[in-house]
Length: 150
Image (cartoon, rainbow, N blue to C red):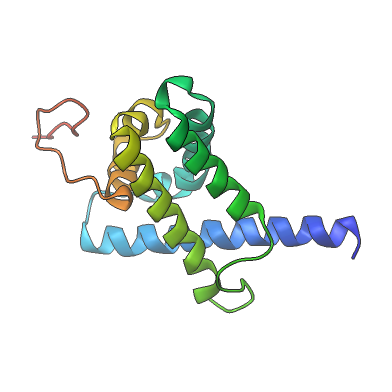
């Protein structure tokens, strides 16, 4: 196998993971109209990658969250998955589930502060990440909560 085939496989896999996240956001937006817009959806995966990088390099987050994020990144880069990626839809759903599971573990070990501190995206994207990580909705007026619009 040549390096161009490997690189093509990695890029194709990342595009399919991105499409899986967009599908999840689309389904979330259908259940919660007005929460996630198209712009938020398109920025979601790049913002998620920045979040993971920031948690990985944040020494104040503790060792456990950093090891969890490092393991997640290795899993996402590894060509061997729980469910092979060539199986349509289901092949990439396991990646989404592993990301959600690791985010939940990070929140359990470090609390929600690292997610809120390091999230580079919009408030709607943060709410989607918090939902994915199992963080309950914050009431309006609390720090980090979305502002109510009149």
